[in-house]
Image 1 (spheres, rainbow, N blue to C red):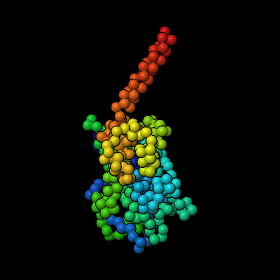
Image 2 (cartoon, rainbow, N blue to C red):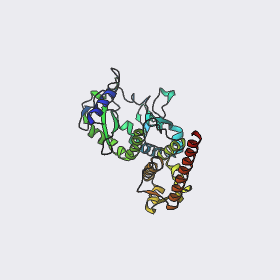
Image 3 (cartoon, rainbow, N blue to C red):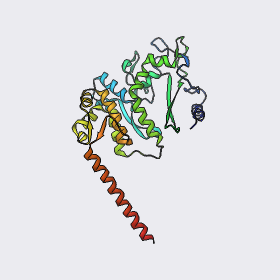
Image 4 (cartoon, rainbow, N blue to C red):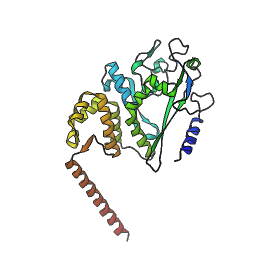
Length: 302
């Protein structure tokens, strides 16, 4: 797909919004400028923190559950619910809003966000939106990112004199750091989306994807308490890291999903030789069985 054609698609997608809608149909780059400041003295303070569809990234969940002193199971039960993400068909965790409090975020009070230093990356980007597309070129595939303003009518932050570029805002809010933490996860979503809507992820693959990307304790038990290490070779240094560090385990999980769900090779884990030989023999056996069945059907039609 040519880059100019890709940009036309982006323009068309953004202009689908009705007049007065929150998303402004203007593409922004890293050096694009805007004025904004949010603080307790602004009249609309915390009004944007309600009725939101916040998809929690793996790193969001790790930061929040550690901040609250909860296990992943407890955090997911109290504050999240599973959702199938758009055309990717991939299961993700969405932050629950409090219906009894006018759809307010569970972590927000009149005094502001109570988990501000560990807030999700979606909140860190606001009032900037981020979109990613992958264009298929002969060279393989190149990710195209663009930004846009989320300018809600009630928001007075845009009237403040503080000037930012997209780049300086991302640095100030640490959303660039969160992006680095979640880069491999985003790659998995893009990889699945490239297969198209007709490529349905099997139920067991969905369960595996959701566990690995939302529940570090459960994934750690899966690695160390099942036959996982009888199936895969993982070096001792990596095992020590993932045994104690959730972020290291998260990154290891991305590599595992690349292999287990998408069939990609990984430098971090490899199938044991005996398992690989067994797998190859099973594939050959299934192919022979299928060929014999087709030959039998062909004879019956003569």
